[in-house]
Length: 226
Ligand SMILES: [Mg+2]
Image 1 (cartoon, rainbow, N blue to C red):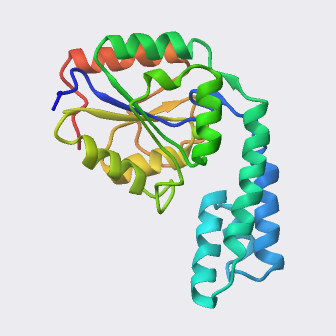
Image 2 (image 1 turned 45 degrees about the vertical axis):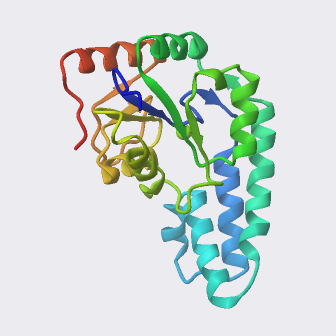
């Protein structure tokens, strides 16, 4: 087994490595309206409005399990349609390919944890030639409970625990930070404008800055797992 020289870097996908142009606001509103009009929850409008799309869909899955209904697969299909449409309009974060290549050459192992489906994630990663630098892509197809739940990060932590003394999760939104905090993996914000109450190592604004930050932390021997 090869030990990872520097650190395991786990990236979020949307608005971290690529910009998928998914209209999360409209999608969230649509899911919320479906949950309400189909009477799939007892939660108030206010409570629903604080939830991410995946959190609402987990509620729907729980409803389906209790009642033997099939709302969740139908709503997930619609979400994937919106994601695929966004993937087709996606742009890539500046310098992504060069920075990933540099990080890989310097001895970092690169992985991705995204709430997107595998089909959508692989479509954008292939389109921007990022896939060759990524050791593993973990999507909602493999993770039972999605971010902000720490399940996906705990799967990665377990998988790489014998090879990586350090790990970081890099993401743009509070749900990424919440998952990292709960998994005990240091979180680096990427233009994270609404961090709520999550703990962050730092909040960087581009990938070159991120590369400098992790190099600084790793060369100082910091950033171990909590
Ligand atoms: Mg994101």
